[in-house]
Length: 199
Image 1: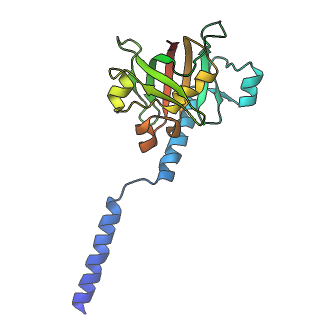
Image 2 (image 1 turned 180 degrees about the vertical axis):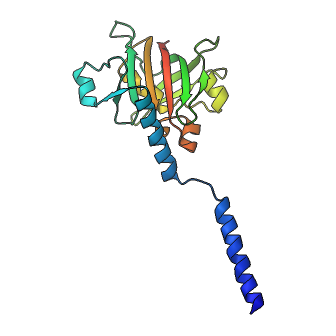
């Protein structure tokens, strides 16, 4: 009987030890943290969020510190639409040069910035019947060098429907619209994209 009691006590103690060591988060918990980080960023910066219908009623424009929440989940503020020429829009197979700053909403820290760097990030804009994608073409660019992938975050492509050459936008990009690392770790990012230059 003592052996059985000792065995059960040991089994119970081991199960408690293993349970105490399990500090992994579920996907649902990570999504809750992401949503909270986005809400905190919006509140801390006094951002006014408008609907897509309000955005369209304003001629697809936003006021200062006003962001439209798009169907993709991306929040977008258009600081400057860019060129006055309506023809200066991005087209399939255009190369787009980008100067940007990336800020992690969970870490509350700037992750990357090429705003004052010599090299700019550049990507090929591609459109097919089923998707729109961007492929980084410069291995020296900050995004490809840092994250090790040529895939452009889907959130970066969203503004291109609303702006022209040399536009300046600010984005809050949820993980599902971010780069591979953002999707893997459920990290939202804020981007200040100072220039979309169409080449």
